[in-house]
Image (cartoon, rainbow, N blue to C red; front, side, top):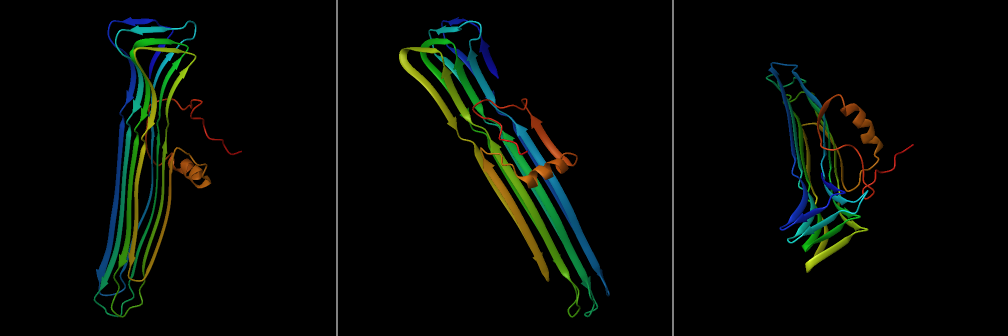
Length: 282
């Protein structure tokens, strides 16, 4: 945060109050299991895995000129700029591979192969920018109040379960089951505000701009292969600018806390009036 409160500034050149956030969180998880059984007869093989992963990132940038006890005056012969930008990046890559194989030389052997996997991943990037001038007088060649949000959330999840084998005439079972739950939430706005203030440009150019170019890029793959029975279930929840009150993920949040969690918090949990907390269920 860049903050100027109750302070007069006079400069022969430019005056710049700028807050920039370019934090990066990269999380990579790879879980690969392979089970095999071979022999004359009655071979059994099983590969099973359960993965719970969560990545939380709180970013954002704020630049504010505020008058509380007095009206601050910024007078510059050059340009006056109040700017906030956020280009934070959260990259999450999760790979889960399960392979179960059996092989018998007895052509009538009843061999079983099972590959069972469950993967649940949640990614949250909470950012946003605020450029604000309140109860202040700004004078310069040009005056700019700008907020830019270019935060990016990239999430890739690849899950595969494969069961194969058995004998030529046996009654064995090959079972592959793959369950995937993926949730990706990108929050954050760009807000530029001028309130109860005076902006004067000696060259005639005054800019108050807000640009939100936040990006959510998601890829989910759930591949299930079996020579007999294959079952695949995929649930994907992706949202930009909205944090849903999903009962399923509220329950999973409680279970994720003590398991696999990667987090980065850069500011206290709060919301400005332009980005209030969503209503809570009672």
